[in-house]
Length: 142
Image (cartoon, rainbow, N blue to C red; front, side, top):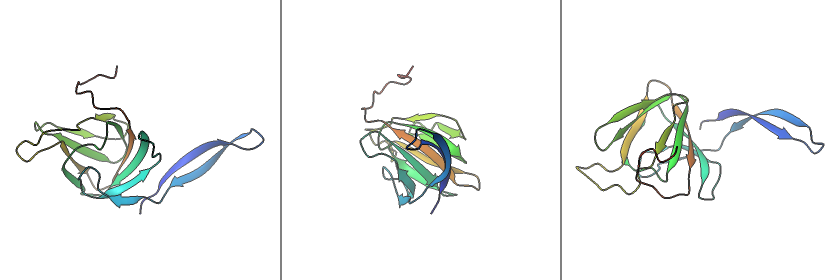
């Protein structure tokens, strides 16, 4: 089971700020949106929320849709995403992607997108899920 280290800046009862070295733990191993299983750690459960995923080396998520409109940022490792039209993009640490392919219509065995890891290290993704509905217009966030 993976862990993701992070630094937590927090305030004690006296009002003094401190840093603590912490780690995200207790991931669930399951598929999202019909994709192959990956390690998932939900941070919030209220519709909007933050989910960290760890995709194992060689992981491929066959055709599936994003579970909700979401910002996706690789923290480490690399991954690829292929759209139904055959366009494929690769993303590495810090490259921002917005996944909003909900309610696709099946076409030639394709629905949504495919994705997978690149290279010999797992891909750690930070996904910020929105509770909003898909807009169906590219670039609507300005």
